[in-house]
Image (cartoon, rainbow, N blue to C red; front, side):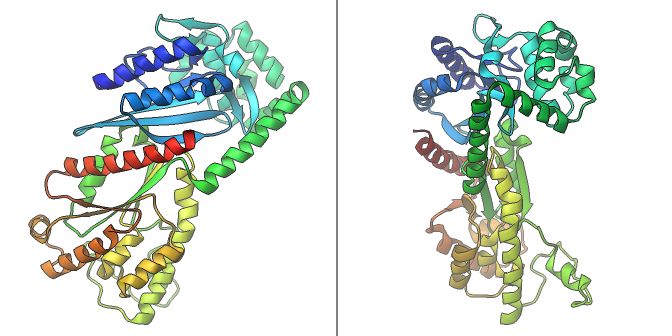
Length: 439
C-alpha cells in the first residue's frame, strides 16, 4: 500500500469520526493506516450516509482519486476508488451497509450493528457478538456455511446472551447448533414472518427497494464495466491484458471474468456443424488462426448470423449478470475483431456493413481498446501476419478509432505504458459517469 492510500484512509476515517456513528464490521485491525482486506465494510444509518456523501465526494476530488465503480443496492452502497501514479495503481473498496438483509428481509438493523461499539482511538468497530451475528445470520439465511477463517470470532461469541437472544427472536431457534442444521430457506421464511409481525411497513419498503435496485442495476448495468481488446497478432494484447488485471489488484482479482473473442454461449461453429452432420471434418489447428481459406457471401453471412446470436444472447447471460454489480468483464477480442481481422473469423463482408451491423445488433462493451503498433514493431515480435495484412488491420483500426466508445493505443514501448494509458482513460470515464449518478 502506497503512502497516499494510507493518507486517504486516515482522512476518510477522520471525516467519519467527526460527523456520524459507524462501525467497521470486519478486518479492522490495521485500519486506518493499513487495510489487510479486499474491502472496508462500514455499517451506518442510511440517513448518515446521505449526510456525509457530499463531504466524501469532496475528499475524493481533493485527493485526486477516481470513482471506478458505484453500486447502489437495497442494503448497501459500494464505492471502488482508484488512483494511478506512473506504473502503480491503487484501489480502495468502501462498502456502506445500512442493514443486514436478504431480498429486502431485514436480519439486523443499522442501529443493532452500531450499538455497543468499541474504539481503538482511530476507528470504531462492533463488539464480538455483533461481528459474529452480522455475517452468521446472512450466511445461514442464504444457505451458506459460516467461514472457517472466522472460527475464533464464532467460538468467542456464539454462546453469548446477545447471540442467543437474537437467534430466538429472529429464527425461533435456541442456539447455533440448531441454526446450522436448519435450511436457509426455512430460516429466511422465519425472518420474513418476524419482520411481518414487528415491522410490516418497513418490510414492504425494504422489499420494494430491493426489487427496484436489483431490476435497475440489472437492466441498466450501471455498476461494473466491460472492456474489449482488439488488435493484430504481435500487438501485445495478452501481455497488456494480464498487466491490466494485475494492476487492478485485489479488488478485481476474483471479481472479473475473461472471455476470448465471444461469450461462447454456443460451441465452435465447425464443431457444431460436425455434430449436426453438416461437416465431415473439423480443422482443429488452432495454433494458426488465419489457416482458413476465403469464404463466399453465403458462408460469411451464416457465420455472421451464428456469431451475432452468441454475442447477443451471451451478453445478457454472461456479461450483464456480472456488470450489474461491481464486476469487470474483459474480452481478448470481441465483435470488433470481425471488423478488423476478417481472415481470423472468415467473415468476408464490407467493413462499413459490419460496423453498421455492430451498431444495430451487437451489444456494446463499455470500453473498446484498439491495441496496435507499427508493422515493423509487430513483425519483430510475431510473424503470423505479413506486412500487408498488418497494414490492412491497422487501416481498419484507424477507421474505428474515431468512433464513439473506441480508444486507439500504440503499444510501441513497454506494456506498462500502454496499460497506464488504458487505465487512465477508463478511470477518467468511469469517474465522470459515477459523479453524474452521485450528484
